[in-house]
Image (cartoon, rainbow, N blue to C red; front, side, top):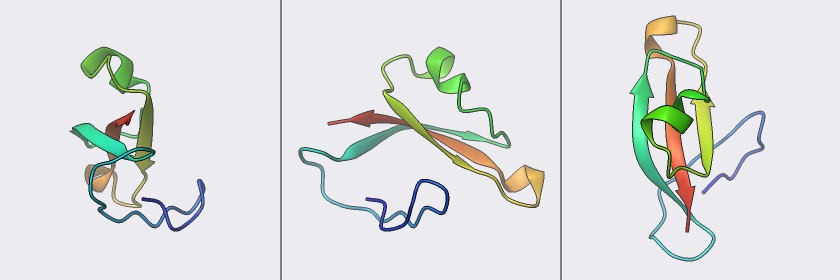
Amino acid sequence: MNDGTDRNADLRKVPCGPNTYEVLLRIPATTEGAQCRRAAPESTANYVHDNPVDLLDYVLCLRQR
């Protein structure tokens, strides 16, 4: 669940249920959310973590329940 905003997310783990997102795949060292379309085509959304240290960037491919 995002307790923050789209621009400044504050994510926390919640039990699976309606109106939640399941993490399908984590893609390290990138900020290209479009990679989810190829790597996890069943995803319906993505979350991009852009760290000042590029090696710590990642994308989460998500599917809304």
